[in-house]
Every structure is written in C-alpha cells, then in structure tokens.
Amino acid sequence: MKFLEALRNIFRIPDLRNRVLFTLALLAVYRLGAHVTIPGINAELLEQFFEQNRGSWLGLIDIFSGGNFRRMTIFALGIMPYITASIILQLLTVVWPYLERLQKEGELGRRKITQHTRYLTVFLAGFQAFTIAVTLMRSSLQGTSYVISPGANFLLMTVLTLTTGTIFIMWLGEQISDRGIGNGMSLIIFSGIVVGLPGAMAGLYQGFQGGQWQLHHLLALLILMIVIVGFIVLVEGAQRRIPVQYAKRVVGRRMMGGSMTYLPIRVNTGGVIPVIFASSILTFPQTIGVFAGDGPWVRSFTQALAWGEPLYTLLYIAGIIFFCYFYVSIIFNPDELADNMRKWGGFIPGIRPGRHTSEYVNNILTRITFVGGLYLALISIIPEWMISGIKLHHLPFVGAWVDATFPRWILEGLGVQFYFGGTSLLIVVGVAMDTVNQIEAQLTMRHYDGFTARGRIRGRRT
Image (cartoon, rainbow, N blue to C red; front, side, top):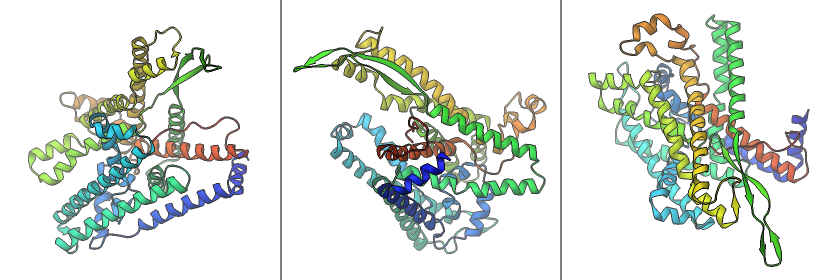
C-alpha cells in the first residue's frame, strides 16, 4: 500500500525520522502531565460535577484541554491562554501603530511580537488560574466542597501550578515548531482532542450493549461522521482563483513579466478563529452566572443562553458569521492588494487597475466569506444537535405547536455522550492536513514517494 510505503520512507530519512520522533516524545510528555492533579482537589467530586454538565460549555472547555480541566491537572488551562493572547495581539495590530510597525520589520519584529505574546500569556494564565481557584473554593456539590483545605495556601498553590503548567505547554509547542514536524501549538490541541476518541467510542459501544443504541443507529452515526469529515476536507481545500496577468516590462537588459497567475481566496479564510471568538463570548453569561449567585433573574438569564437554547443557537450562528467578516477584514486588505498589483504591473483581465480592482476583489471576498461563515456555523451546531438537540419548543408563542409537530430527535437530540464535530473536528482535520502536507513536502524534496499519487495536500491555517 502507498500509505505504508510512505511511512517507511519517513523512517528512511534520518532528519525527518528524528523530527517525527522528537514530536511524538514531547507530545508524550504533555500527556504524562495530564495525570498530575493539583494538590488539595477532591478529584472524584469534580469528576461527578463534569459528568452532570457534559453537554454544557464546561464540556466544550474540557474537550480543548484534553480532559485536563475535568481532572484539574497541572495542564488544566491548556494552550488556550496562549491562543487568546495571540488573537488579542493580532487584533491590536490594526489599532496600535507600535505593533503594526513591528509586524513590518520582518524577523526581528516577529520575535518581539512573540515575546509580547508570552508576557500576555503569563498574565492571562495567572488571571484564569486565580478565577478557577476562587470558584473552586466557593463551590460545592451536595454540600461537599471541591477543595479539601480552602484558604490562601490553596489559592497561591493553584495559581502558581496552573500558570507554570501553561508556560511549560507553551515551551513544548515552540520546541515542536522549531525542532519537530508541524505546528506545535496546533498539535498539542490536536492530541488533547483525539485522546478522548477511544473513550468516546467505548461509551458508544457500552450504549449499544445496554440497548440505548441499535445497530442501524451506530451505522448511521458512522456514515454521518465520514460524510462530515469529507465535507470539511473538501471545503478547507476549496478556493476561488482570480486570474492575474502581469504586463511585460524591461528590467536592465532582461524582459520580465508577461505571465498569467492566480490570486487564491480560500472559502474558509479565517480558519476556526471565528468559532473560537463566538463560543468564547457566549461563555461569559455562564461565567457571570457562576459569580452572581442563584437569583431568579440570574437563573432566567443563564437559562436563555444555555447550550442548545434557540437564543444561544441564533447568537452563535450570527457571531460566527460576524467574526468571519471581522477577521478577514483584518488579514486581507483589498486596497493594499490592488496597489501592490499596480506597482508590479499586474491586473485582472477585464478589470481596470486601482479602485475598480479593489472593489472587484472586495465583492468576491464578501460573497465567499458569507459562504465560509455558513459552513462554519453548520459544522459548529452539529454537536449541539447530536448531544442536546435544538430546543425550538422553548420558543415563546409557538413552543406548544413546535413541541407537537417536530420529531423528538430534532428537539432533544440523539443522546450522543461525546463532543463530536464543530470546532474540535475542524481542528483535528485541519491539523492532520497541515502535518501530512509538511511531511509530504519533506519526502518530495528528497525525491521519495509521499502519501498522495500526485500533487500536494493543501493544508490550512489553524
């Protein structure tokens, strides 16, 4: 088989073999840290709490931490503080001239931005660790506290442990990016997600053994998973190619230009960042509810924005589409693109250079971003529907009619007990495509056969 031959080729190249083994070794170190619990935590009680809230926003956070948040290990915060810091600095580049100047300084500027990202990561990790420690000390389950000995010692120990764990994960990711294969931060998230798949499949098998699932249900679920993965691969590699013609010009004694090329615009230009933005904002009401107590207005407010409720789903879809446009407007400037094309003698056939080119590209970008936003929204609400359904019968005025008309599998979901699809599946598929793409490039550069019969796998940014 070509796949097995490609694997053998990887281990025939010493440099590539060392990079792959180095990456696997550091990922193993990350997984070992997932079994070291923070001192002073009642782990069994916390496990019961997460079992009761599996289909909520806490379950979503636990997925990205690879189960570390559920067990409250030293890596409970995961890599999310670093991702949040990177996104914040990327957004500030538009409004802060200092960061914009650093971005244009090349390698030296990127190093300074990376250093600022590390400082902001430490601050965010410390703040989140403090919030978690205070919440754990104030919370209890059936009258029993999650913390064995609450107090200043536990608060200080938790903040130092979680912050140090995040810094160590950040170092692991940077080492993988520099000396391993693939993007280190993405691979850490990838490993945290896929490590839960065996347990999820075991849970489905137990449900089948217990009579909760029938054989045709499992087959339908398997087919749905394959179709969704194929759909993600298709859309992530899809792009709109705009033809660009470069005029001939004389540079010295040589004739330059005169070639035809393409300007590729990806359907999903923003990657999973719009989904992360939208889901992060919608977790604020739940966080406010934790600190505000259990008053009537707090209960009704958090219940209206609970996972699976119509208002939550509507705001989630609208937020994803909005942040698709917002993020694309930051990373893609049609005016600057048109000016650069005109400076180098490039033009789009049938379109005048300058303002007309900018408007033409902007119109295409607007339409294709909307399609990408709908695609992200569709993929993101699939796990919500499979776990808890879309509770349309909670709508005012028409709730009774919807409850009597719509089938229960739409309103109550399929009862799947693990987080499938959405952001996690986008990350898994995207990181796998990017990693295989890099390995394929290394094999092709050394004249070895790769995983594909021809061409290269088009990866994407995560």
